[in-house]
Length: 298
Image (cartoon, rainbow, N blue to C red; front, side, top):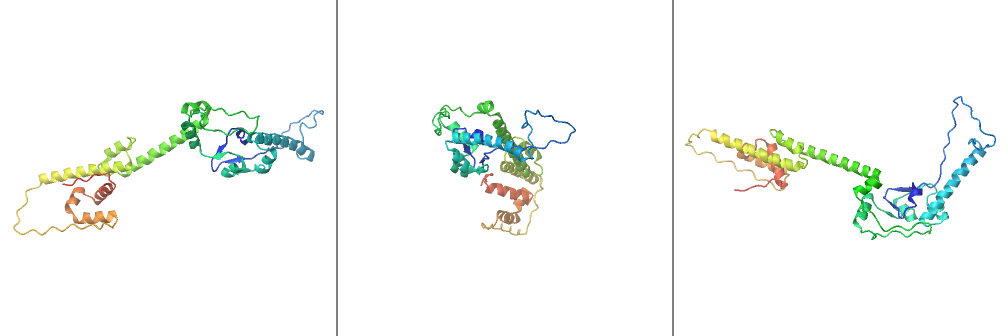
């Protein structure tokens, strides 16, 4: 991979990317005893060297060493360095990571795929400078740069496009799943139909669903209270002086929201009749504090 990448006009790598591994490895496995016979021409004594012997290993060693000579020469030529520098500083077969590779000259700079695409899309053709080749054998870079569009990626980098689209689809699916779970968490008994419609509209967030459910619950309870009052019999006159209504408990502004809501709930009978349950009123207070429900004062 680095043999090919070294020929590029510029090598850009991530902070955790690794380059190098300059060298050649030959793996040889012994033939199994399958009952067959192999006859090698007598004119070709090195066609099937025995790598278990010193002379056989010398044949293989010569091949991998020659391949690595070409590998190192190409890297040195592409990067504008000497063979000695590549042999001494480019890891001797090991890898170099991120800024270490840039400092040694194995890469030009650090960046990310997203930033590179943004650079290509945001820079006018020819504005983004490229490193000048250090060898006359390396062709000069062209200044015409294609716009990095989906069509360009599909035509030239289909595997990269497929990977990016797969990641985008997976992220979108996770986000939609989280949104649906948040909407379901805002459910209250009696509002199943509303929750079902919000779950699959593709846009309502959990907070927005909570505000709508609380508003619907409040409207429902206000209607029920009005019905009860309209059907209630006329009160019997009381000649006795009615006891004074208990004063509503004052909320401690330093206390947590749940404690403040509970103090008001315990001291307001009409509030309890309107909301029915403390959970519904607590949800309404949370939505009000977040600015999701606007309180209209008479």
